[in-house]
Length: 562
Image 1 (cartoon, helix red, strand yellow):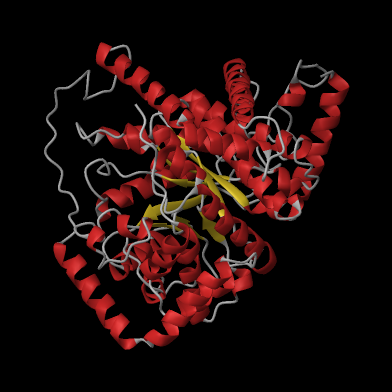
Image 2 (cartoon, rainbow, N blue to C red):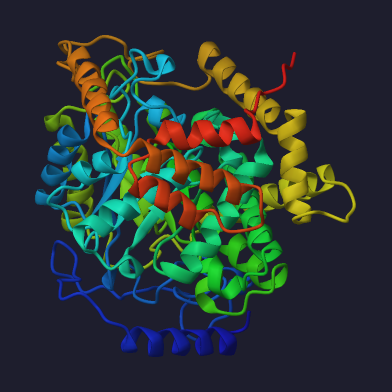
């Protein structure tokens, strides 16, 4: 790009920056030195390939979505939390919000994640252990008791039974008197990554996609600010993928959901802004920054050139980041504070929109109040003390970072081509990327490549080529054993007792009729969300709703592979 084009771009950025709202804050260095809001090539000089870097707030968004960077608005501190019952988790939420957290993120227990009630035999011993137990809309009410759902953004990390859980959230908001059209937050709902990595599915892919399509339609029409899909690379990376695989599989899944929306006749400019993303931030500092920058650029180009989006917001890749749980070690766990801080800084320098920082003890158990506070304070130290919020994309133009961004992007594009090849030549029921994803799931293509990447890394660890402090180097320590949070068995007994009382006190005839009506709608082309909401309002349980659909659609069994 020549000097005149770069100067014109800088002028466009300056005009947008001047017109944008900025925080009332000190944007100088610790020593009082004034810094510019963005940096680029020296005036009067050209820069080959600068069109791929550009300016913040301008296509291809490599340097961020907004001209102000974090001078306009800092990232949302969204700490992931959930344990025991709804009342216990509600107390943790109030602690997080009171300590400066900006949004909530719900962790559910395993029975809830699998669409099972707390009294289901398969839930035995699991209630409340890896998240909060939610059986009915009344639990959801208790979860957010005293928290204005219309005034706080809420993320829910659940995919298999995401739609009925979302309906419980809506009913809880109704019971608060909230205007549902004003609700804001994110539902994960990403079923593709379950088949690829996390394994928390209920049905075959097609019924899940039916539910997701219904949800996209409903939110676009009724709750426009709510994001019905958070396409997740986090679990793909935690399963052992490389950074490029995480990026490529995640964006391919996102393209699949774009094709799903288009197949429903939805306008890409209307529904695409409701898609968001969820990435892992691992320990290779510069690789992670490059991954985030490449993600924005790829998404903008594909949405514009492949899927025909024309509105700016449809081209924006908005993403939440969580520091890498898989990087935490049980050995010398206090070192995890350092790991988390480095990973969080990479996410921030990569331009994340919201962030969760893991607690030092999460490799051993759910976090204690103290470790949860340290994780929260890690973000606040970065935000308030380090100056990283002063300049948009401060590493933009770095030879290393730009080369790494290009390299990761090129690897991702190669993977996209291979996925589309898996789907064969058209016609495709939903779209070519979706066909490739479904074939890749069926053939074990994704899981096979992730397993190979995990194996290669494990070999490098065992040979000592890759090093982890406290694990295969620097193993001596004076640290004492941590006190960890333990969930009492009484939590499960109490949850089951309360659920039994709730079932006995409701009108079971109304519940059965509502669930039967939901199944009837599932046999038509009608949108299932209104009927599901009616079942939830009648206090149908999560298990009852999911069991009725399991009976109708069957249960997915992963094929055996050797």
